[in-house]
Length: 413
Image 1 (cartoon, rainbow, N blue to C red):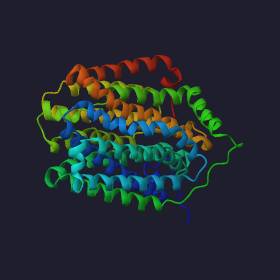
Image 2 (cartoon, one colour; image 1 turned 180 degrees about the vertical axis):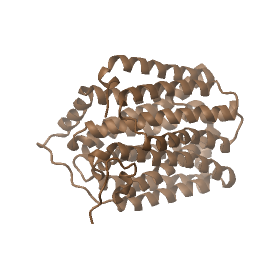
Image 3 (cartoon, one colour; image 1 turned 30 degrees about the vertical axis):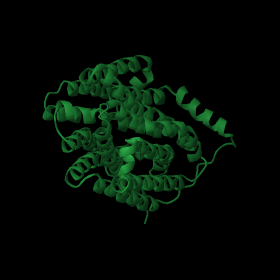
Image 4 (cartoon, helix red, strand yellow; image 1 turned 120 degrees about the vertical axis):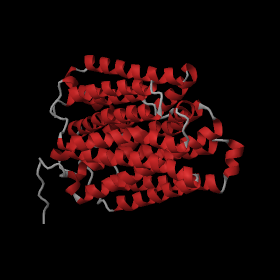
């Protein structure tokens, strides 16, 4: 019996069985990555007590991720996308198991080489992430009808942010109560469960391409599409520069230790706070989609994000810091949902892998290289001024993009 879907149904996307399995897998993988991230950050900080070392965790993942991303986009448009996702997830499983073994059975390597073995493992996960991101972006658009792209983006955002809430919080709690070894074991189990869920999603045929292209021609075509489309370029540029300067996640271990004086448990709640705000906003957006004046909503969500980052920097106690981080999550979620929908609506089917890859480069630059920027800024400017600087630069990005992208400013979806 064919499933009948209503375009006004807030639950339309998750009524599609394969999309549900896809969302389950995204949730589990995000949960594992977020749990792993908070523990890796805490472990590296305890080993080095150096903010730049925390930034190097992001750099260790960013270098292979950004280096492979464009080629991975070409691969996602030429090889079955499910196969790429499954292979990448297997690599994630191996890396999670390696972190467990390193911590529990080969701790002498950390004594000898400090954080270097951790950087190496994170480097390998960067390769896996480089391939899985464009393949996921391309496959997700094949699982739901076009009229439900916005609804699917909202549900995907909910799954991601619920995982981002529970991952760091549970990671901090488990680490505090049972140690890093048990935490890494849970991460390994979750990545394996992710693999089982992805296997439930059927293979989808690749869109027919007009002509055969060389790798160079294929990559160039994807880049030209993004940089010639003012709406797509404006949307992803907002995300890249705003999060590059405004992201404070990298320095949260330092903020928790030096300003708020909490341990790994408090760090877990700080890491979870933005996602709490995102979940609340996602639930609101399911019933109140932000697409009627999408461009205006996107721009002002970035403005609100910058203001919230500055408020976080000025926080003097744990609760005001949590509140400010919740606000960053709420504003960021509006940006994520609108940007994801723009990418799906304006991208041709046969180019989804390459365009997703370009998008992943922008996002990777904002997150991983932003972590390095935050770590260096904290060392040069000291902690609080560096966060205020980042929030102020985010406000500057809002002003620039608003002026140079008039089509984005007036966009409705």
